[in-house]
Image (cartoon, one colour):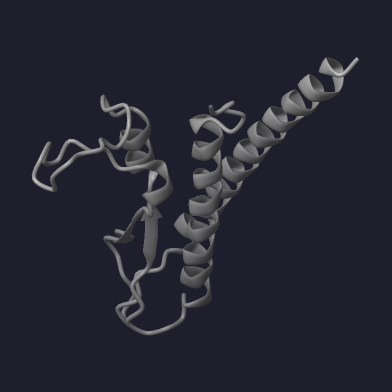
Length: 139
């Protein structure tokens, strides 16, 4: 029997943090290459994939006796969400073909950092609640 200490909300928070770190690296790469001729700025989008995995009507992967049963009925597990790497849109690339826009990249970096901090606070809160339940339950 599973106690369920680590529910899908914690898994969602963990995956959000992992993907936020991945996005941070991508934005940092964009900033480091802002003077590189022909460099195409990239971004990582993952919010929609996380939302689909979390809010799927399916309760989870189905066990089947044959590979052709219930074709397409499985939802994407949260653990497998990797995000989608896209080229950042810049309607005004530089003369050298570089598409990095310093202001946009800095804004994305700040937004990503705020999201990471918010998710970190939520994870810390969940663990504080768990610790409180353990210590108070033993009294």
